[in-house]
Image (cartoon, rainbow, N blue to C red; front, side):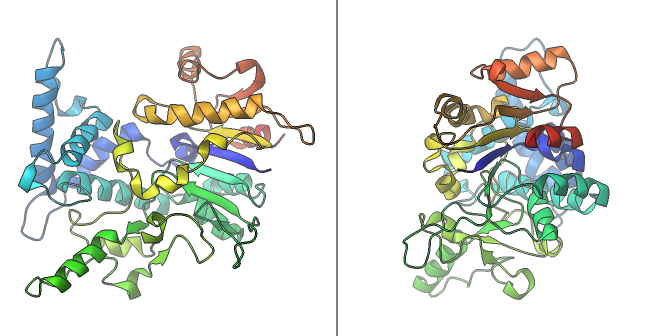
Length: 380
């Protein structure tokens, strides 16, 4: 038995980290002031052509009384356009790389850069709010988060609480599981995670083709600076994908060194097409249909089940169904607890409509956002 916490973007709002709808303008502003070594401007030479292609597509295929302009773009819809184009290789020989075309890679880097900077501005008072929540978690509690930031890890490090970033651990002989840590599963990746697979493949290709230049990677060619370590350890018993993911240090130095269009942190960009890019993190979903069966407590914090997260409705529905419909005689489950920010009755109504499968008579809700009062509600 363990407690399960589902964490969304609203959890980080008190730390003043940007929400999804804020990212597009922040990304555009950053791109307009950054340049490649050859003098190319990241907005004018990389993002703007893709934005213009997207606007042409939207204004030609969707009925609207007036054409939309750049400042009216739906960020998630724009990234979905780029995702589909890349995944289906619609550019043919102009395909940039296996991890994305230049705009996709640039956007991931700028999201990570923005979050990394905003995390440096979080005050001690704001950190204390999150620590007051995390210090009450128990060994083997699970945090399933859809956020890219490492706010939770930073707080747990300060609290000196043990945690791991992968689901399955066993004794050396494989006989039993070790359950003495908080488990954090970052379902959409993290600003400080990098996948080594592409770099390893480049090295293999260079070894076969003797005249091919030795590949370089900002992170993996500079291990002394970034100290990459696997997010799993030798006790991990899952599939191979997670063994290729490394957590790094010194992100500030990364953003000084990277070109922003060659490699990027492993984050699944906000998009209606996220499922296309989940493969490296697919193991986190293994067996999720059994979640809720034996959890003492299920808490959903700041996860509004927005339209661009439509694929998540299926596992979240199953989790809540299991939690409320399967009881055991030897333990007692709490009520489902949901914390979100809704500023009026209309917003509450819309939130409940998105979670239409919840039996609200059997749930405790708090719609003033994540704060001290919500923490008391979670643990009472």
